[in-house]
Length: 183
Image 1 (tube, rainbow, N blue to C red):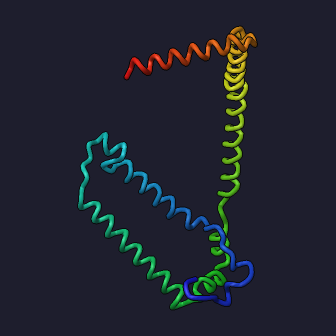
Image 2: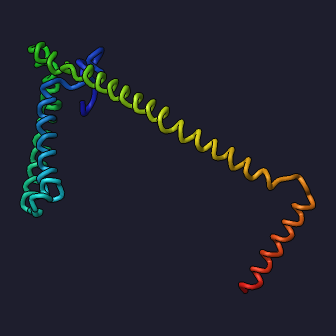
Image 3: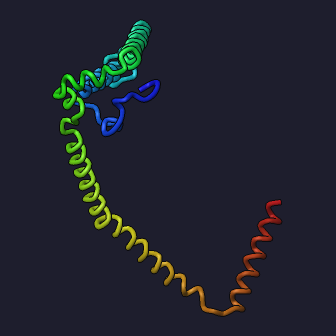
């Protein structure tokens, strides 16, 4: 893992795979603890409602605990890969049922697929409703307004160039008069 190939890292096992259910529980516990700590913390929703102040000693203890856990994890990973490089392959060969449990996804992939399909169906339904009920009505009203405005303003355009030149000259004179007055 860290410093080169092992003979066991060939073939199908050489590829990364999903973590098994035994890793799911620690991750869920960490996520739940983080959610509770975030909600009860000074800037969390419950913390603000309860008036929790920011305790420095709790932050120092949490930091120290995190550093110790990280150091222990690093030490265990180093021992398992460097001191006994075949450890992972040995226990997997000795306990194939436990290895299969680590390799399975415990039904998370189909659940995630079904959830994504449901969200996509909901989004498609909302988009269809929005398109047919709101957006189409808005765009049709906008188009009708533009047509009405164009037809209303078409009376100003009669195709008489002498009139257009006269109005351009009158507008330019009015604009020049305003510039002179404001200076």
